[in-house]
Length: 377
Image 1: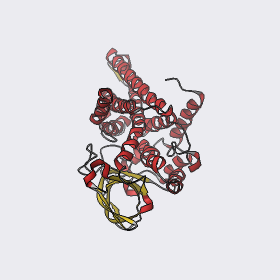
Image 2 (image 1 turned 180 degrees about the vertical axis):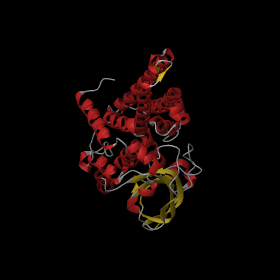
Image 3 (image 1 turned 60 degrees about the vertical axis):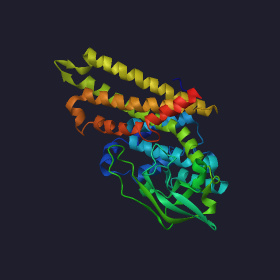
Image 4 (image 1 turned 60 degrees about the horizontal axis):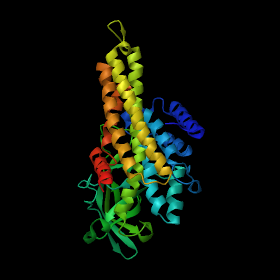
């Protein structure tokens, strides 16, 4: 990909931020299970968590290529930080930006941009994963309020969120057209969260269930209108896949970086591993696939910026980049031999972080369904 001067300057700025603020962070938060508030504030100040939010609401007002650059470079060093960034800039911001009232934008988008508010996106349920249409959370209108009951699962930022975008059933007889989106504040009575999940990877992000027990949601916190909750969620994920694809790309590049570094240093049979043809061929294969993933990611981002329909492109980018992140992390660890199995080496954490890429925000199988439906319609 050929980037313009502004984009290259942005990439350098993010790399400088990573070098300055995240030198030892990944290993620390992998152990503690939470990100330092100081880092979250600095990410808000640099607009990395509000890159897609317009300037009038305090965000960067940048394009999707810039968003992808930020996600790639953050995730190249720390996938957990990338997850936090994309949750704010995409999953939480986009529904409000696309469907919110001016009052909602002023309150919640400005809150995210300033770093004063942390949001979450509640779609997945214990019985509704890839089948997002199997929602059981309900919202019943009662005067000036909707009474919200149900449970969302695997929700990023759930234990620390100030509000959540929640998809609930308002009219079960209408199927998908009977779902509605709400902005639900965490300090309202009946809103709670489950235990922090002890995850395999991206351990620096806090993940848990969201629990709603007769939560009274004011009518003014309805997002959009009744009956378009599923539409709001799908449109959000459609664009959000670009961010997660860029995250997977960053993870893949980070794994490749570690493999190159290690094989140039590790000596066996009297020479460095990088001198062996098998190693060279493996690295060549990894480099080629990472760059192919990079092209798909930025092609989708450019089409989004151009106002083109990029449903297929974002799905292809997310699918391929996620699979390559897993493949490259596997090969990078293999090149490390036994040392790759030790936590002293970054590749051990990267290998664990890579696994989620082909699962969350739409599994690889779901992405293939999206791609296939696009070319067969």
